[in-house]
Length: 141
Ligand code: HEM
Image (cartoon, rainbow, N blue to C red; front, top):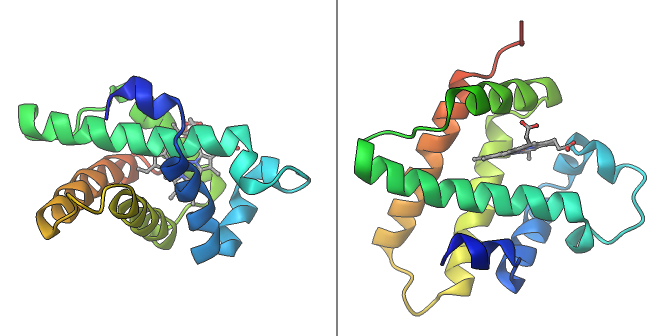
C-alpha cells in the first residue's frame, strides 16, 4: 500500500482506531482530546492521524530495516516522539495493545495473503520502531 493510499484512511485503519480501545478501554485516558469529545471514536480526526502515523511509520521502518539494518527515524523526531510518549505515560502494555491491534487489522484487511511470515515481518518492524522510541523515553531536558 502506498503512503498516499494510507493517508486516505481506509476502513481497515478505522478498524485499527476502534480496536485499540476495544482491547484496552483505559488507553482512552491517555488521549487528552478524547476526554470531553462527543465525536464517535472512529470519527475522531486526531485519533485517525495517530493510527495512520503508526501504520505508515511501521511501513517505513520495514524499508529502513532492509536498507540500513536498523530503524532510522530522524533524531530530532525520535527525541520528540520519546519525550511525548514518556510525558503522557505510555507503558509497555500500551505498545503491546497497539501491536496486537495493528497485526489483527492488517490480517483482516488482507486475509488472502496473510501468513506467519508476514505477521513476523510486521511485528519485527513495529518492535524495532518501538525500541527506537523507548530509547528516547526519558524526561526532556
Ligand atoms: C502522539 C507516533 C504508540 C499514545 C504521537 C505522535 C506521533 C506518535 C507521531 C505526535 C507527535 C508527538 O507529539 O511527538 C506513535 C508511534 C507509535 C506510537 C509511531 C508506535 C510505534 C503509541 C501508543 C500509545 C500512544 C502505544 C498509547 C496507547 C499517544 C498519545 C499522543 C501520541 C496519547 C498524544 C496525542 C495528542 O494529545 O495529540 N504518537 N505513537 N502512542 N501518542 Fe503515539
